[in-house]
Length: 183
Image 1 (cartoon, rainbow, N blue to C red):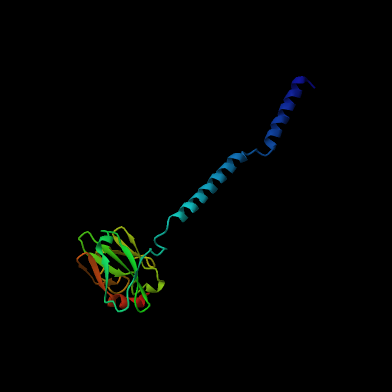
Image 2: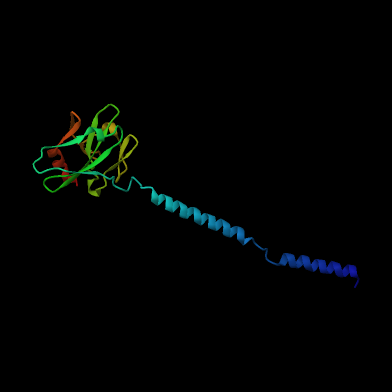
């Protein structure tokens, strides 16, 4: 056999070996992609836990103790910002408590309502504010803050009558006691 034929045969055998072996994969690249994906998922989970979800957590409320026999509750109007709902929890003299919120609208009106409605109250979740709306945490319905205080039935924040006297917003404790059945 000639040297030339021997080289051709050797070359053919090398080519046959090259194509008969499984292709080598670059597993380093695949591992890098998997690690980056896992880090992205972990990062998402960590950051999503850091931000409270307003749809699931009840707003922190300022606690107020109402003395037995008191006929009214007075809230300083200077602690109520325009467009931002302020939540309160009033401990009534009869041992019950009531959650409510107050929001001052752009037209200067202080709107007050129970942090509950006649439909979803049994969930004890109340409302949260989303821009110019109050949103029911249970059913997700939106209510413009300008409508607060007018709706008293169904899934709508149950209005409380509050009047401004000097530098105070005054709410009758009898209204709060009537609303205590929803808490």
